[in-house]
Image (cartoon, rainbow, N blue to C red):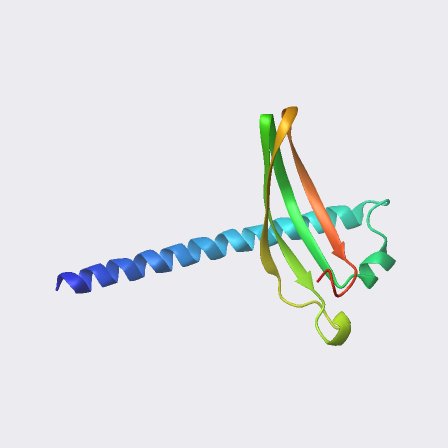
Length: 125
């Protein structure tokens, strides 16, 4: 009987974590969409012909950097690629990515930056 209760508790916990993880990913995709909307709305933003040639687009909303002698950066975003032969079809499903880094040197401060990276060839994808 005890094993049944443990199994039931674990299944509830796993389903709760899955829902929580899906909500985080959904929120991340919304943030990525908002960044793209803002950048495309700026007159000096990414040229349309460059976007048309891109095989993939990577968006990292609000990558945070902080340093006091030793620094680090952290952000999460999404990559989306064109489907089909030679990446010429419609846009496919997104994949989630993380960006992390560290550094040492004379530095002090912090910042948050939105990154939009265009992958222009098959090797980059």
